[in-house]
Image 1 (cartoon, rainbow, N blue to C red):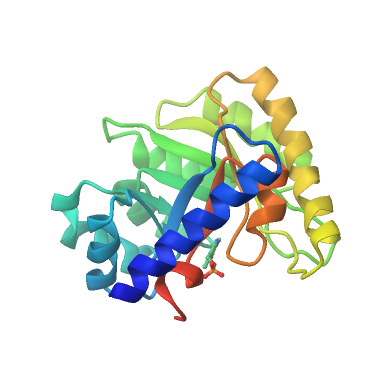
Image 2 (cartoon, rainbow, N blue to C red):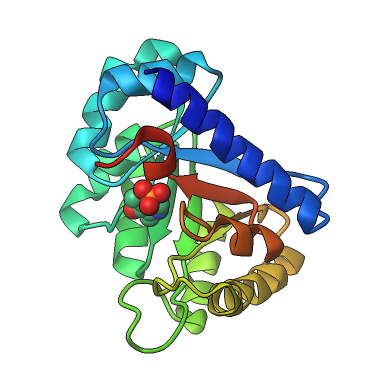
Length: 225
Ligand SMILES: *Cc1c(COP(=O)(O)O)cnc(C)c1O
């Protein structure tokens, strides 16, 4: 567990360093991606002050949320969403980052409508060439935003993206700037928009230069899965 502490400090130092380098006065939020990692590790990180955790599998995440209820953590669903998992996601998580189609959005809203707290919703935007598998096209993003705005179950908080993997900083940045441009337009239209979820272990710096407000880090904190 001492590994987790030093890993965590290193990731935070990396974020702070990138903020200084790129003139960012507000650091992005750090989401600790705990999928496939144990309750013990999550508890250890929570003990160091981490509050936001991300999970990619609905059942696994819901189980952890129940077991760790007393810690009052913020849980984000970030994985691909199958229609038949929308109920378990809507009933357990306070954030969802990976909404990529209307059908899934409508099901999440319907399942959330019976719960007092609306769900914080990010739309996953398709970035890069046609080869990139996940995410919605720009016109679908705007259509889904309108649906959230008219709903009771959701608050529209912004965008998430997972660009095609690249080790080249300039390529990483090119992708992130595509998301940032759409995000900036949405933020001028919708006052509730304040979150741009992009950047992982391998491309944190490029995301921070591109004004990400939330980075999602798993491996560099918890070790390999
Ligand atoms: C697993 C995952 C991450 C974390 O990836 P690491 O490479 O372990 O840091 C971030 N975002 C999403 C959507 C993921 O599924």
